[in-house]
Length: 407
Image 1 (cartoon, rainbow, N blue to C red):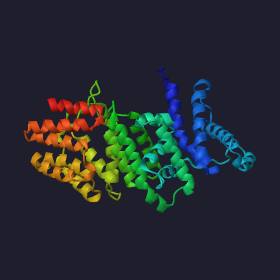
Image 2: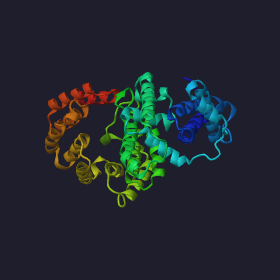
Image 3: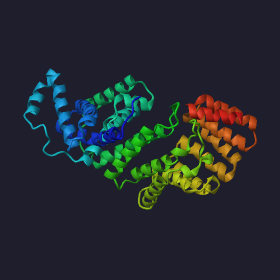
Image 4: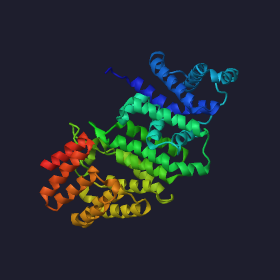
């Protein structure tokens, strides 16, 4: 693999930043998301090839809009049924006289990519493509799925958007309220897959978690009054702050209790804590805010013994009442163990594990093994650590669980 210069990395970052702005202008002018997205991808590829050699143009946004517009005409020329549209378009200036607001375009793109008619995997792929500027190959590598699969998801998503007649425009207040949970869920999924990969050799996929943070920052700039947007950004920052301390040099997993907290990102923690402290008193409470508050309690503790577990358990109680779910119940058992002891937590775990959604999940076995270990049942702990290791597809997690089983 060849050396990538700092200039090329800066260009790649600039292209990702400009992608939604350029795509928004084209879709707003021409209305065909499918063809416009293809044209922008070709323009991004052209820029990635020419800018490192010729230099970044004085107006990179205008360069991309002009190049994308030309690519769009070329796409239309290949389709005889659209020749009339091409003739009309050719009479207009290629340079848009009044580019649409980048903020409005980004918002419209976010909500278009998370159209309720699309499946969640399609929403994730389309968001990474349209807003992140990632190529099909990059998305495939990030999600550890075949490139053909990603291509099919994106093609089907664009076809579904076209078939439903979805319009590219700033969503109404009702549409925004209806789709915002899906938008936040997609960004949350992208971050989680980057922070703790569900399969593969690496524990982290930094390109995914970083992209999720970048997109959530954009969304917060657009919707500064939305408490759950702020909560999600704070949660990502407070969680990602621990990334450097989560693995050993050989890639082995280091659990939270054993991490060197001096390696945590203090700036990210300060920003995340500041966001959630400013949000909680004024915003309507939501699950992302509560999860961010839990993460803040962890991050502000000097070590695991000084962690305020009673506050964490109280926050989990509120979270379970506001947004009950199997993973919330499972995570809550850890706090119960720290406050009321492993025996009480084991009873809670039996209730949580009865949920069909957790059937066969390796984390249930891992938590049970930890609780049995705390109770002194070493044989039982070993059995469940081995069971958890067999069920996870993450190699770093598997190595950690096997090490615990043989400890």
